[in-house]
Length: 169
Image (cartoon, rainbow, N blue to C red):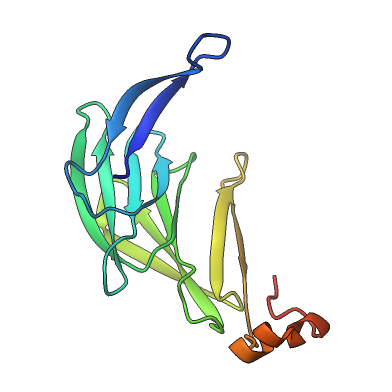
């Protein structure tokens, strides 16, 4: 059983936190909650990565009602970032082939989540995190490329220890 809990931190008391609310996919037992974001409007976004064929669910909760607003089936995502300056939700993936030469950053309008826009990023095969400059709204994206992934034999024999790194920032 996986769930997300909204906590109120109460340092200095017998219990250092209080559970305010729990979100769990309303009885979905096969969940793999992986990432969480809250928009500036208070909408809770949960990424569930426990589905076959590379499909994930993006659960959108209305915290006021404590219920799922909607569920969107999305492809192969591994992370989310809710903008603090605009009504945008950014979604990214690090599940490309190991030696991928590009990746896609998806941009969703939080008022119309049905039409994601994709931006192809060349030279970066995997996005691992995103943040935003609070003054300018410009995104910072961190990721990597793995142009020459070592074989299992090279890893097990230790041959990779004397080679240049296979991950490039």
